[in-house]
Length: 239
Image (cartoon, rainbow, N blue to C red; front, side):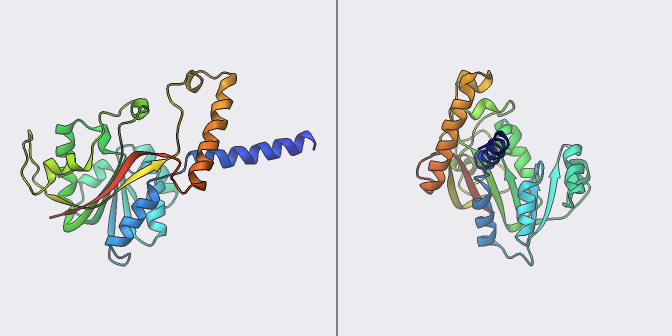
């Protein structure tokens, strides 16, 4: 086998590696919840903090009307160039539309509790009565704070302590109320953390990449059994 063939094989393996390692574990759960609690013909979805539009694209492909909103105008422009329905936060504030489903994927962990209460209330004002809020967020793991602006993890029961219909002993209450309809804890492949080779590229870096690739393969081959819970996706109904 010549060097050119080896290079082609290496590039193919590398492509498979990155596609599996970067697999969106939340997306199938989100789409399952949307399909279960709505009909494509009449459902309008708002994707808050849509980023590069990956979930918007999947929701639109599933036949739903979806609007993305993001604070970053560069991301909004990039989404628009791809044909996605996306606007800036300033533009969204000028609208009065209400939605059947609001999606917040990896958003709430970036807020302090008092700020999150106001943030959620403001968007829940734009959710139709009986509509659904879908939250996808990570659990506290040793790599939770790898993201520079992660503030704290939240659990479904914590959301209900402020937004649930039953009064609890907390510092503040919301003006909108939610009922938890379903929740699924996301499992992912095992990851290596707090390893020097992750942040300083050495001979060991490729070794850990190979180990992670093996963990990814074992995860999919075991249908998620060989993995760990590191996040959750919940669907709440506005009541």
